[in-house]
Length: 129
Image (cartoon, rainbow, N blue to C red; front, side, top):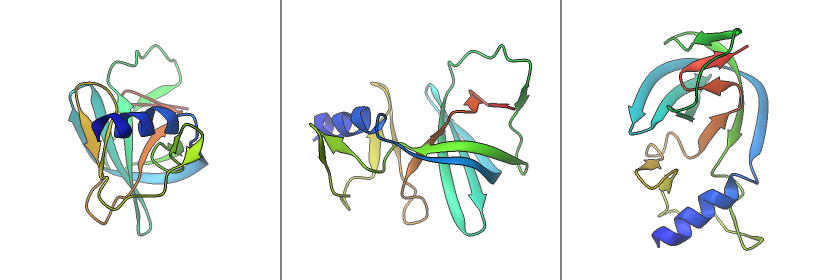
């Protein structure tokens, strides 16, 4: 089962659903091993954005992400439209966690967060303007 999940995630990274410049308020920041988890919201929608801690920051136009601030993230779902060998996999009720590396799985949050996201304008805990 774990092998299938890893295959889903590794392929899904190539078939992301992208949302450009979505203004979200950051309400929680957490970390797990080599990953930051940035929790953001817009109206009644919640987003869990995964960011690699090891992304180096050497950007002039970067600002540290702060709680209760709004940012125009360029997010992409890493768990929508999963494919294995070119065939789309239907959403499974019992698959709640995904392996982003060999160290740790990152999971949904009950019924409130049912997808995981990455943002092209985040490096570590820094927002790239």
